[in-house]
Image (cartoon, rainbow, N blue to C red):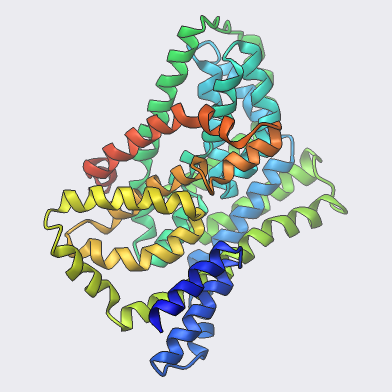
Length: 420
């Protein structure tokens, strides 16, 4: 019966059944087998949604969608380029930073591709970076934003794993900086190889660019300053971000209309949040079942027969997460895999915060890896290119990201040094 249930579950997922139905149905079947009440599914859903950090997810998503739909990307790119455009690979680095920050706010790097692709792609090609590099850049640059607050996967991991959110938001900073640094070096190398001329510093252009983008530039100060300074909780900073962005983009810049723009953005952003919410409830129920049936303990005993060394386990975990990221989206992967792996990793003496960084750093690669890599399909639609052409374009960026992931995985210092 167990094998039959597993087979039906896998087939349902392959045939495109929504994940919350697959997980919820599986949880109900398993509860029935152990004589547990089906109401546990609803109870778990209620427990998840009542956590304070959960409030931050819909609010930050709404703020990110508002920014993406406005002319904020154009203003931010203009000010970034005016300040560091003179640096070798300047526009490429501007794109990396802008795309990753937008992904952190929207929670989905696919939204970043739609919002920034039309601006960055022609600008990169015009500067001489080449079409292949430019396509790979747009496709892959947003995914490192998963590592920094207010990234939805970061908040979600903290909730599901029970890891301190305050620790996680600090621990991911250095890994994010490492990844951006390696990708920036690739941008500098490409600029040097293509003999791209540097943009001269024009002080007269910096002041107008800063003035035009002054309201958007204050948003990170409010959000990051409040959360990292300890003045605001995640939920409070999300409220501030949503209200501030709404006022700026609707009433100050008037880039978004109240009558048509706001209802559409609310609908689109909350569809994403609603999907996450349903999957969270079903996954939480599955997690409780696995704990009650001591499945993590059984998995640990099985692994111990073959893997005794912590670092060998980390290597195996990295390969496993790369495969998971290739077949599941990051939200589903966190909700399904985290409850199973966290107890096992704890048994090997791996710091829970370090484990969280490993999870996020590995799973963000899944945005650009077939067969499920969402960024590949969105870029394919956005630029009218074959998916495999986009994968080949993004591959050099993935190589540098994998290098950063390996460094972060096997050198815990990058994740833990800021906590001490």
